[in-house]
Length: 185
Image 1: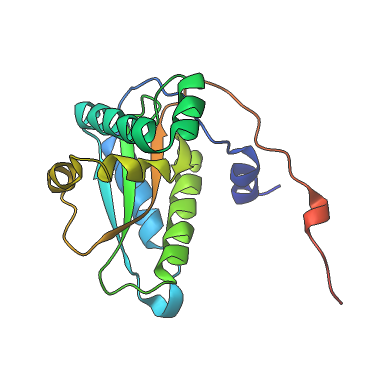
Image 2 (image 1 turned 60 degrees about the horizontal axis):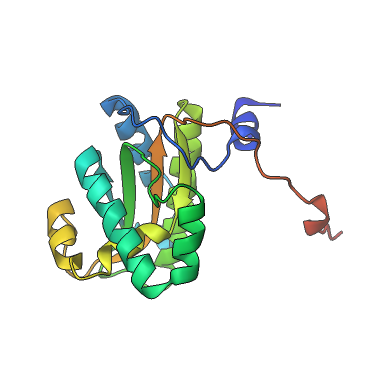
């Protein structure tokens, strides 16, 4: 198996991190890989905000948990059963935002971008999990304050995020079901 296929086959969604910081050159490489993703009509309707301030990430985690508790109690209970953190003690958070001129397909483009970053991270020995719940930190009563703190410009919209760091757990990749593939011709 070639190196790319091995990276894909070995990657898993990591939900527990040591908290140790990721080296700046690796953060840059992961973001650059994301920017190399394809997009519809090459519009590149995205912005990546890389947050590596651990204290800020902890504040975002608390804000997201508070939002879940108040608005989505089932999800809150599920996260509490997994340790009570939506950002899992990660030292880095990549927010993928849709630019104001992005259309509906921009969310698909953002999904492609975050998957490319997840694979790039795995190839560098960095664990990650693709996460939508990060958005909840930017929906509560302190949303505008947090948006300003991370440099989130007006008119931009949350698409998805990548939580990343050095894993404090091992897990097997999810099981695949080859019956989900149909060949024609």
